[in-house]
Length: 347
Image (cartoon, rainbow, N blue to C red; front, side, top):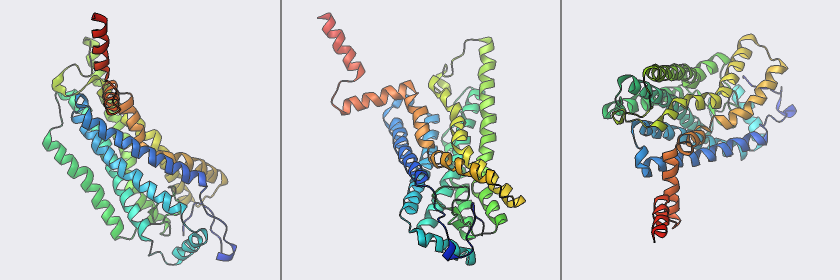
């Protein structure tokens, strides 16, 4: 069996292999905040018609994937928090001998998170591609048929890969190998098999998304720079683009993804190095432990950070949401307040 930490020789000498409570708490808080962030993004699409365009629709799709991820991570955290420590140690010993079974909650949560995380990577790359091609073509590049194709691609491929992993018995209790208090790839499989399935079901697509999104980002910035050389250019200057000035924020979506997910990626490569070289240096364990805290926040925090970037920093969306909130609370909107002040001034 492959572990992040040493594994006791027998059950009687077993020591606690638990994650710190603070890791579980951070994961839970991050998941809850992302649920709030996802709801905010959904509401912004429904109630702020001025911001409702193709780019915002693609954001809704990536937010669906992120919402599924944070709900799955939340379930995983609660399951981990409610576990019995002695049973957990016995389970690890048992799986070391018979790597076949896992509890249903862990299996379902692993399936859901594996599927949704890959879908989020696909949708993030598609948003960057949409921005780049819209700027290049000087028209709204994403139409109804492309949306259908994107849905087939971004949900279908992750689903097929996840079903294959489940069918091969790869999903289940991982004992926090490159993860936090949630399940992913069974840690009782051989190191080579674990690395292979972690790559196929997540890390390959994650790193590919980093690279592709960065290229699309640089391409978008180049197109903007080329046009500003010869004329005064505004990101949303032509309504035929179906872009707004605030949509330039979407070019930064990979700058949200990478800082949030990079800690888990580094932990994965540390695990790969330890497996290949059989090197269990204390420094690697210390680094892995520190990165675990950041990963516990980042892996489930994308919806919350996206809500900050695409709702709070977007002036039109922020104003639209605040006006809806004021109306819900029975207070006049900004426009109504200005009219009242104007009428009072005239009278």
